[in-house]
Image 1 (cartoon, rainbow, N blue to C red):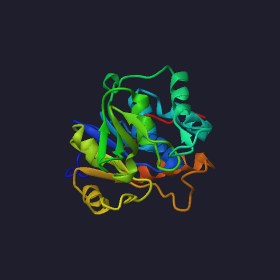
Image 2: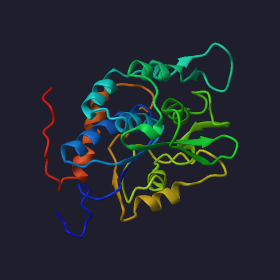
Image 3: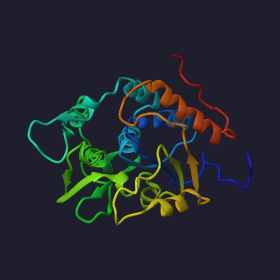
Length: 257
């Protein structure tokens, strides 16, 4: 390994920024598996939208291979349910609450074994909101609330929607949580989803910082909304991570299927 490059196995305050991308978030699972197999263990995780779902499970201590089983079984009903009453969005996130309850129930973010934050967007101010304490379900629900699909989530008096409107790749959030080096996993480009907020250039400047290691799975042409051939998304995440982390030897073999 090049001695001028930080050793991700030993760096203190290693952060992980998991970007949004709907169903494409399954690729994060493959990245997490490769990190595990190479002895790289982030101590700080920030997630936007789908990245918040995967990141929350990882921060709560879920094994990356258990995450693969969940991802292969996942469907929209596990995060949202159709609402009969009219409103800003056709789904609410009660499905997500039911899923988390079935896995052991809600937890306080500050009680998780790995420091975690979910990024959402404040509807009124148009600014990003980092949710790093309180209900884990509420934080995930806000971060995935894609406008027009999910209803906004009210948390602490603020009306929140998908964090991807402001920052689809939450590098700055990971740094805010205390990371000294960030592994950033980008699935899709920045939305630039708010007329007055154009953050893509700023986030690109974060991506090329020397204290950021960028991983970009090749997912071109795949739908963000249709859960099809999920195993290929996980494989794409693995391949991307293996390309970037090829200097790190495997210290744990992948479990046999």
